[in-house]
Length: 66
Image (cartoon, rainbow, N blue to C red; front, side):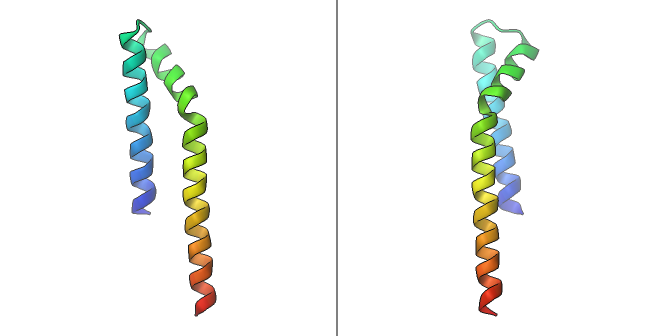
């Protein structure tokens, strides 16, 4: 659970960083945040999915050993 919270926090920081870069290029605040979120959506989903599936596989393997 702590790992998931850390991962979500990291994704939020990356969205803010991307939106700040877009703001420096002249985009308005809302447009920059929306654009950054769209750009980061796929990597966020892939990373989170891989982490959740990996944790599930580890949990299942641990349960079978009992």
